[in-house]
Image (cartoon, rainbow, N blue to C red):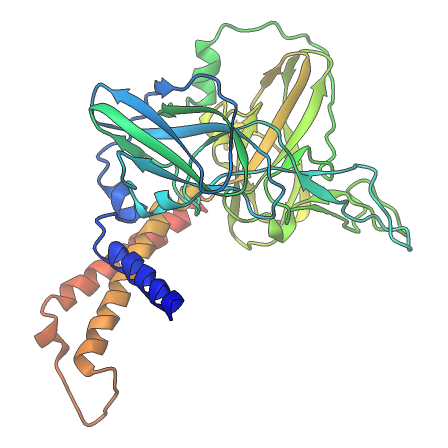
Length: 413
């Protein structure tokens, strides 16, 4: 009986704390930001750390700001747990959660194949090898779980001293560094190369081939190499299934990424070409963010387009798709990485607009249900405008918003 009483007491405490809390969802919090400060500056960064954090353990920092403002929070860490789900943490600023999502923010973790010598079944077909989480250092700017926003989460810091508290909710990590910063607006490829001093091109024609079925790291254990029986991709065998591609229908969720490592023997300029097939979204475009050595170098790489095609195509990254102008990447001698990230944030305004419409419809339905008592009676008539005098204008706004969303989707695709 005592346990039941304590359980009910804790339940009501949590329920009423949420009911009367002033904490809002991030979508409403985001609306308050007048303009995004894309200045590229760093407000504060901690010294190099080596702090192991376990669930429900916290670390605290004091950050001074000269003015009220919005900042992104970057965390450098290593994942020490070997769990299916990535670690989660909460962020409190001045003893409050700035928005509901700050109570549980998912970090990213990477998976790695244990071998590239792919195992075979009794028929000689190659199978996806075992995989494990890796403790490679990760530098991650906190994002919302949906990954639909163009920029990471914005945290408001007041003028003066701010108390920051990070609490790990699940997993186990080693904290390496914490910083508050702002992203910088990406320059276009043309502006970037014109502003930099030109490097001497080595002038040697060199091809570096990367096998898609052998990723260095991947952000999800559900996205894997595939064995496709198609003669136009390699490796291929008439009688056996060989792993020869990566991704497919599982590699479609915002934020999922794959990283490839490659070695450059001769420094100089290189083009990047990807062999792909996108036959899962008819008449639609899939978008990937391309990172070279962990960075998005140009604006054109933020939303690299992969159009619908039922055939295998070779797409060379371009800065002007109309003139087929290809991007030249300068690589020094040594090891480099290229990362492809599923990016749906180009639909940010579309998705937020649809969310607002659904909230309006749901609230209207609840009010109608309240008035009618939740019962349907053909013998009872009631005039909806008597209860909702602005419903005509409200529904007209919904229709106009849907028309704009339709036009935006058409423009994107």
